[in-house]
Image (tube, rainbow, N blue to C red; front, side, top):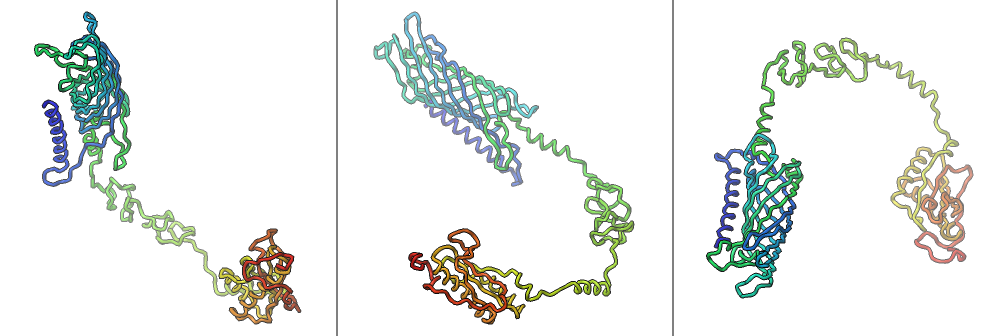
Length: 491
């Protein structure tokens, strides 16, 4: 019954805190509410102490250690979950009786910061904590020469999982925003029939004064605050039980007090009040910008109210009146003289000079004389040169890479030159007699590579006088795909 009542009390406390938070989040009248409670960090900690059991036998100091996680509800109350391992001894020298108890438990505590109700500092330096909680423990007691109900004197008692309650006080000392040291004194007692067996001596006499044993745990705590930024990107504060409940309110009030008094004085009458006027003595009637500075629209360092040309063309010097000093423009006679001088030194290219012109080269895929779309632009350029120079003839020379035999490559280079000529004739209307077919096989490689697209090409140059088509070489058909065979047989 006692455990149930304690659990019910804790649940009612948590529910009450939730209702209080909802009331705070929804102010009367439906107005906008600003919360001054910052997002805070979590506390994790380690503890070590000297536990002992007060009961029917004389107690001896043992050793114990544990860890915990703590999160604040508000500036006073927080919830702490922890685990503890402890080991103690008891003995009765006159009767040569002794016991040894090992304890392992987990608990949930409500912690109250009793002195975090003063508002004179942003953070507490010293914190007085009180706590109460419940948990579950599993303890084992080895006893010697202690009379039990069943008549035995030596043995071991295992509690199984038993509920217990605890309470305590502590002091914590703030070392830095991320670390504090605490000392605490806690007392725990097991609920139910196992409550008198921590020291191994069970009292069955109702008149006994030590019916229940208590585990005392004086300990030292090392506490660390963890947490980075909140959802808004602001740094989380220290846990709320360290922070002044009115810190943010005080900061907001200080910010309001630091605001300048709103003053509508406009000394120079330019329409910009002195509070934001960067030129408080502008000339009367002068146009100013939003900062109260006299306008200089063209940036020539002559203010508009003095500038006779407020929008002078950029790049020219201005005189004291802000007028750009633009040199006089050219007359028609000047333009004609310049053009005549240029034309006098201009010479059109002759047909002989065309021999040194650069004409594009087209390339082919391996073992192919098909012209790809990517080469159409180059052939168009060749055709335009020939159309603009109707008296010239062009030699079209085919080439191959080093793959295959001489006989095969000669035919393939012939086919490539022929394909380029047919394209110029059929697609661009160039007369066939203006194009001279030539082939070179693999004898004129541009790069020393066995297989290279750079070598698989057709070149164009201005034909020499009297140059004619080169006949097709002897050899098998070439350029219809991947060739098969032996070089010795002509492939």
